[in-house]
Length: 156
Image (tube, rainbow, N blue to C red; front, side, top):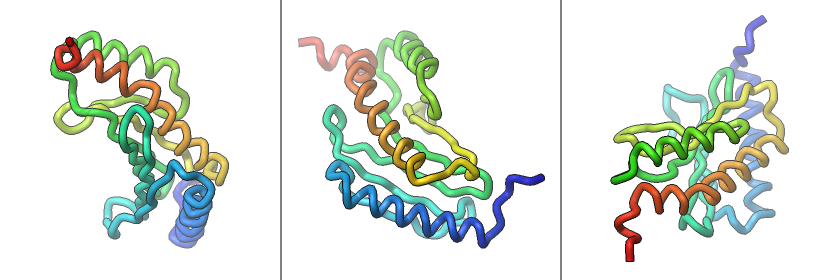
């Protein structure tokens, strides 16, 4: 049996995600905005959940609806300028403790936090967990990674 969702099922999920994100925004002052991306042939729908951070000014989680999975990701920081081996070791050690997400390198070796969820497991509470976890992981790691990857900028 295929786990490929048909257009009707995806349309239902898209409406539910809109509703769930709207409810999250109305009950959570950390969420500043929820935007929907322009249509793109590469994905069914994409949302941007922009939140006010404490250690990082803003955290934006991109949520992408595919035919089988919900992909979520956030930009953490640019590639480190120094202590690259220690920085990457720190990412790998943090990956070992994460559930449902992982650190990865993207364009220009920038650091991202990414994850995927099979659509069969998508519920309102799971979407809330995803957004909250992405926020919490970035808040916990941002300052230590910044201090390691840009140590000489903080050397006074």
